[in-house]
Length: 322
Image (cartoon, rainbow, N blue to C red; front, side, top):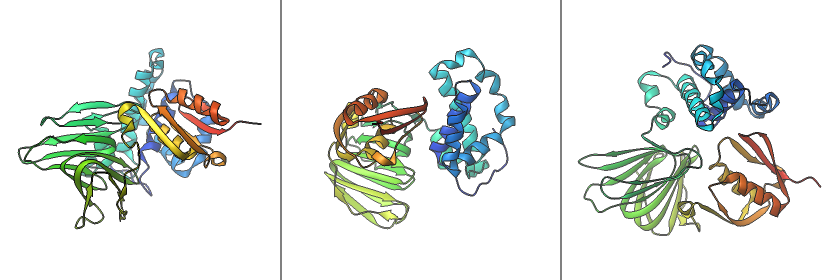
């Protein structure tokens, strides 16, 4: 593990660090397109900062270089392992994260070391110690911490669905943006860099936003709440098909194409974006989540679109040329 502290003007988003790690692995393995990599770096200042951070880590990355050159690394699983190692180094090195005790307690580091994780496109079912059920959606990281006095889940990022079991101990879910207390219920939580959402399917929950821990919001079945750094929005009716991911499906009802592409991107490794010229096109349909590239092919055929692949990890949905 690296020592010392690296500072930066602002933390680098985890997704950007992950993309930089993938680019590094692909480049060292000889499968990256240098022009596409340069385009990714030029896309934003944050991308360039992540790449510069990689270049400052020559000493730490040197130990990985021989492994990256092995032909066997062309297997997807080995590439993912190598990228995960690079990502761990990036998170530890900078992005605004100091090492020592503070670094080990940072949200990004805790997510990397979480006891329960899913990769993009992966879902898991877990039976909890009290008999409750936990469903974990794509690209999620969490820890389950049961004690004699309470049941607690720490969701670092991603999405989960919880069905609680009868038990006198309180059931709490911690997120970076607030704490949810279950009141004998089935509910879903989604957490990303910008905030969290809670959707209640049965009974009720209480939400304490990190920005206003003194204010308790109670949600009943069929209700939905978005909360973040500045507080909580108004409680609203839960959108339809919120739990369709449990069946491996995504249901879009007159969504802007940009929203659909952003949702599909959660289930696919790398970067998937929508061209601004077609971002507002309305889309309605039901899509399987186990093969996103097949979904994109079908979507393009039915809506006059095309997908441009710069690399396997970077694709853009745009209008098909006339």
